[in-house]
Amino acid sequence: MEPMDVDAAVFDVFGTLTDWRAGVTAELAAAGTRTGLRADWAAVADAWRGRYRPNLLKVLGGELPHCGLDELHRIMLDEVLAQQGLDAFTEADRADLVRAWHRLPAWPDAGPGLDRLRESPLLTATLSNGGVGLLARLTKHAGLRFDCVLSAELARSYKPDPKVYLKAAELLAVPPHRLLMVACHPDDLQAAAGAGLRTAYIPRPEWGPRTTPADPPAGVDLVADDVRDLARQLTAQPPARG
Amino acid sequence: MEPMDVDAAVFDVFGTLTDWRAGVTAELAAAGTRTGLRADWAAVADAWRGRYRPNLLKVLGGELPHCGLDELHRIMLDEVLAQQGLDAFTEADRADLVRAWHRLPAWPDAGPGLDRLRESPLLTATLSNGGVGLLARLTKHAGLRFDCVLSAELARSYKPDPKVYLKAAELLAVPPHRLLMVACHPDDLQAAAGAGLRTAYIPRPEWGPRTTPADPPAGVDLVADDVRDLARQLTAQPPARG
Image (tube, rainbow over the protein chains, first blue to last red):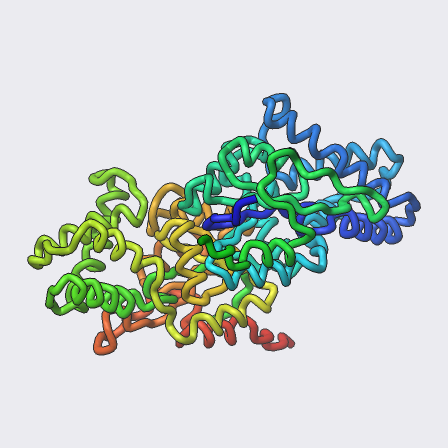
């Protein structure tokens, strides 16, 4: 691989920088205890997240009307709770559980790696399907510091719609080929590459510690162990050419 | 004044957080030296900035087509250089001078004050007529750290259009009356108040050390000496009511 020559790096957030499964499972369990309910809360979290991709694709295909991610999370939560016989959760519980996605824990390497990147000339930003307000709260809560917060909301769409990646390049005022998309999801990276961006893959066991991360997509520009390793690779001096 | 009960604070950038006059004057002088030109460079900077407000109002009134702030800065620079007999500046000089607005120095209190605010639960963001890319570069260069970068560009307009303030509230997902606009420009604060925001005024000698800052606008919710003082006022415990 060539040394990476980019002006900015944008990061997926759910899975790539934050451990949604640990955060959502803990909040479901706490809400369940308050309500006197028992369940395999990690399985409930997985079922909730499992509805995400098919529903996004329905929104992008026009089968569902466009709505914000909080609203989509709420619809999917109601479906999962009904399916699993957890109807006892109140309106207030459900509204609060949607906000669990605003206060997820970061993977331990993410904050230090981003801080190191922020000291380089590279611009750093989020690029997530979460809304701007969600991302500002989540990154503040999780100690993830960026130069800019970008969201699919600003393109009024969702990844993997190419419009989202191109809107990020436009707003940062960089050409798409000088913008790096960082994610643990192969389909996110493939769509970014299709829009002309460079891509970096980070493996994450996002479905739990006993699961195996996806393989990196074909043609990815860079593979890093985690965000610290990404920062090392992106800020290393390129070898002298002679 | 009541203790301020808000969820987020958005900041004007040119003048309120950065000393555009010092930054632009220094870059004009350096470019002039390279080109062998002599002039009162602070007066050139003032003439350049002096064209800003009337031209913005022309854009908002539909007399000029909407364009990004970089483009507007370039048009105004060409006018000022022609008027002052400084035609010797090359295309490359002019393009570089437009980028002087991307690397202005911060007022000394701004970075520490913002860092203190970021440690509080309050969300902090820019709200400037500069574009998202300009603001990400400028805040990174100047050491101004925010939870979010918001720009009039996201409302496809310019302050003082009420749409800009309402778009900021929408994107941060806070009601307008729980959003605080911080600025040194009375017209910015009056427009924000008209859109339902709370307002904080900071005096700045933005037209040079021998000039007097504007008076705070009537009805402003809070007056602070600088951003450190603002942070002290916003993060102080409200007095116990009894």
